Image 1 (cartoon, helix red, strand yellow):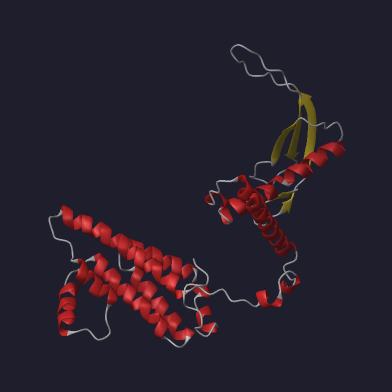
Image 2 (cartoon, rainbow, N blue to C red):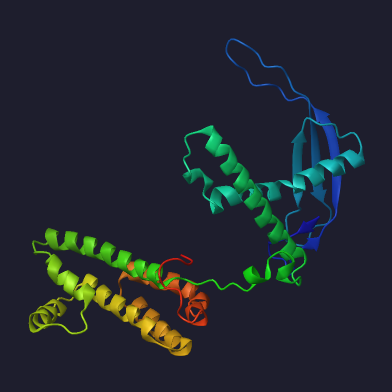
Length: 293
């Protein structure tokens, strides 16, 4: 087996272990009114020999109702146990990745084909994961069609803009409660909408109202201004200038002390490598029919 983690400089260090097996019969728990029959089990203890200095020895204790009377049988049970983590990952894919629990199907005739489909998806994802680890230099067109292998993951700008909008709504609701507790009137909805909309050619009346609104030093107003600046990215014709402006926007947002907007900036920075793909696709896709995050 291999040792990983800890304070060792090299992960995957091979170790040697001793194997000890025996048959035991644990005493069954006591139940009022009836007794449980004893069950004989096999115990396997695998303990590391000469662990590195300062490290605890790697020790496994396995219990099974199967026979382990020989070294070959003990090795077989260990190999079975080593498969349990892959089984955990296999079932994690439909549960955590595909969110199969959110289907909430009412009839078994609909649930069975859904489970079968997700099991195939889980097998395929796990197969590709293991294949990529064992053979990282294989060309992708061995398992994907050429059209699929050349696909570009585009983060649609419609869904990107939804994140700052949700953050502003969160800030606005919190700020409205704070103003109410302090005895102030909240900002009128029409004035908030004027700031969010930000018309290119405002009328004199709109310009006056906008000037009045900007006099408020509220987090929701500053958030709306940040959102408006973020919307201007789509006007750039070059991913280089778009990227520079994006980095400046993230820096300014992180210094704004508006926590929901700061979370949006952190999330966008994690996905920054995918943002220029919109330019690679020649700005052809922006209607909410591509990837979300």
